[in-house]
Length: 181
Image (cartoon, helix red, strand yellow):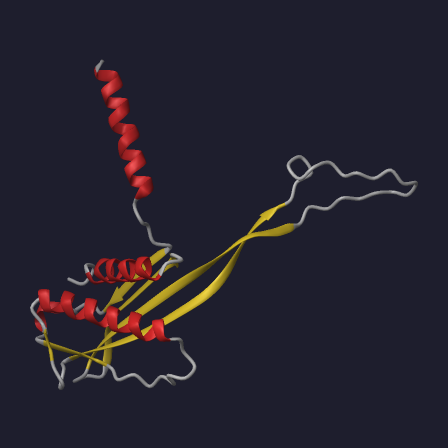
């Protein structure tokens, strides 16, 4: 009986781990002497983006990211200022990707050819789906010395619905900033 309980607990834990949202990549780097508690204020670098070339949801998502960053840094003891000690620069990149698979005569059907000439069949890649990948770069610079003290990058597949994207953005920013010590 105990053996079955152990196996069921293991199965449930594997199931729950597979359901959690994992990131494609999450990278951070920092200066060796950087500690967030040494600083008191932060601010965002001003945007120099041509608003005509970008869709409206992009700006909503950038504001959502800025609010999530501000909430996280305020919880760490910093405050937002017009003359900050730490300057935050955001950049985002989105791209469309195509999921492909390799054809195989066993799964795609045997070649049907009844002619006189030689027949050859080649395996090829065929598209099976499209998805979007988003990457968020977050750079924190010290304004006095004008040097970058922390850099974070997170990349993940974006869901199709806008509400899910917003929820995922807030969680991604929190996970990224949790790595700041």
